[in-house]
Image (tube, rainbow, N blue to C red; front, side):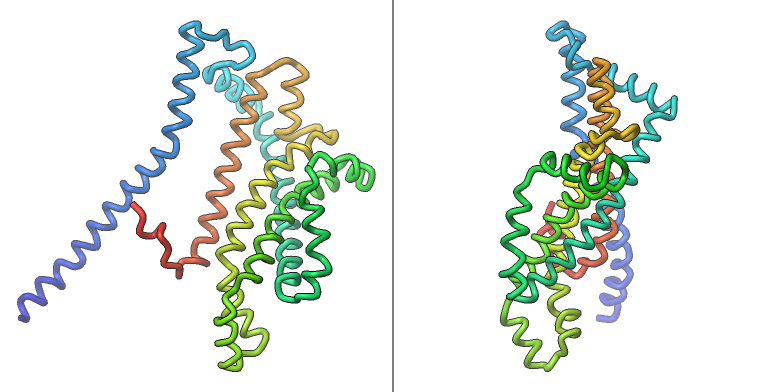
Length: 281
């Protein structure tokens, strides 16, 4: 029996090292699968132009788009636009997320506040982003304040809806257990409500971040002299479809990277979850 236990003990680290070794190729494989679809699309796109199936005048091939990106990058213009847009999204995201979380917490925790405030916010949520532009220009001018306010507005509503709905969906039996153990209001929030709401809150942050990148385009249409939105308008006015598509691709890449960063930063907060994703192939 002792020899068998010794064998199992010695084999355990080997098994763990093999599992860790096998996990790394799996992550690489998932990344490869993620870029396979756009990569195939670019190859087919380039082949269609090279074979003469399309002229590529209005929809230039990836080679021309990469040339435009390279030119903008080497001149430093691209990084200036990326920095300006990213800063606007960051400030607007923080402001909108904080305001949305506070408003969602109040309306989700207090019934009177929900009945009083939620109908108005739900009506405002249906207003398109472009509809806010003339009003924000009138209020804040065409400078940075109006742009950040528009981005924060886009971030606010998904975060508010996610937090408020998550609080209202907390299992009543769990809350009653907290009352049975005579938890104070603060302990009830810290030990029961906050962990129950946290996964939905993180999802709402991701949704808000995505809308922030969408709203920044409308924001940079408001007289911006730099930013990826300005790069789009400049390409449209000068008849440069390669520059327009280059800006769109940069938007997609930065949006994906920021979402991945948010997921990475918030992953430790929900590490306790035993979800299907943890056991998925």
